[in-house]
Amino acid sequence: MTSPIKPPDGNWWNQPVNRRESIWLGLGAAWSLVLFGWMSTWTRIGDQNPIGETLRVDSDEYQQKMSEYKEAATETEDGLVPPGTDVYLNAMRFMWDGAPVVLETGTEYDIHLSSLDVQHGFSLRPEDALSKQINLQVLPGYEWVVPMSFDEPGTYHIICNEFCGQGHRTMHGTIIVEE
Ligand code: CUA
Image (tube, rainbow, N blue to C red; front, side, top):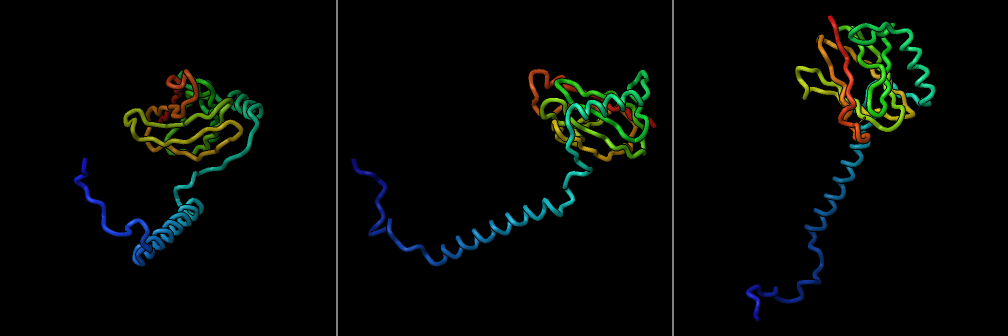
């Protein structure tokens, strides 16, 4: 059987690379180095860098902080009212210890986040616009102090958005923001 596709003529498999092709390959390589350098620079100077402060913490230590905080906080029907502007939350399979918490609009809080067991995702969403969200990672061994203030009163849902086990989809907490 003969193929309708004809082989190209001559020594086509062993030709020197065309000069223009070499130039473009060089430009491509140089541009990829520029982008790589820019990526590295941008993680240092860009505005998108994570806010707040991260500390190393033992999970026992954090639990200690957690219980001191809970003792100082006021328990109400809606949830815990923090004693000051520091708010502690401890992620664990499959709940947010410290939630529900009652906050007020216009105050800048320091939200302390840590995990007791595995990595969890802290996704905070206002109830009336669930697609509006901030997403942070919560890791055991670290305490992340995130400054946060709320402009609008309402219910904010804390949803775990990092798969953490069988009860992952039930891992939910609330922040209630009052005027
Ligand atoms: Cu915690 Cu998923």
